[in-house]
Image 1 (tube, rainbow, N blue to C red):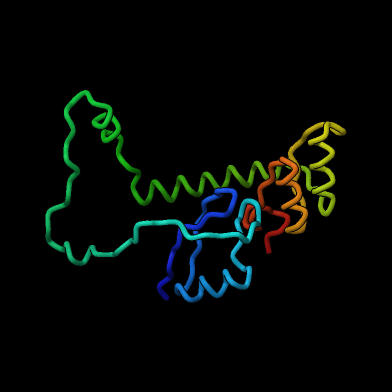
Image 2 (tube, helix red, strand yellow):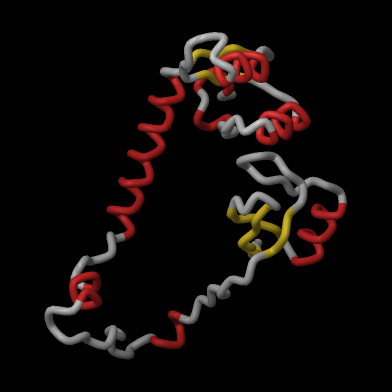
Length: 165
C-alpha cells in the first residue's frame, strides 16, 4: 500500500512527519484529534509545504547519472559539495547506531512511573536535585508542564526497554 507522507507541525513549531493512506485519512484523523505532536502532544496540527517525492527512476533507465553543477574552486559551496552523502548501507548503520545510543541513554534514566509530572516540577523548582527521569503523564499533564516552561519529550516504546513487548 502506498502511503502519503506529510510534513506537519504543531502550534509550538515542532516539525514531524505523518504517514497516512490518503489525504482523506489524514483529514479524518486530524478532525478526530488523533494526530498529535510527538514532542508536546498538541493536537493543533497543520500541514507544512513540502516537496513531493516522485519515484521516476524507471524514466532514467539507461541514461547517464546526473551531476550537480560545479562551483568555482575555493568557494564555500564547492567545499560543502565535496562532502559525499552516505550510501544506503552507511545510512542504515548510522541509524542503527543512533537508536542504540538513544536506548542506552533511556536506560540511564530513573523510571518514576506515574509520578513523572510531580518529579519534573520538583526538579524545575529546585526542590530536588535534577536527574534524568522518564515516566508516564497524561496529555493534559504534558501540556501543563510545557506551559510552565518545563522541557519534556515523549519516548516511543521502541526506545524504552521496559515498555517493549
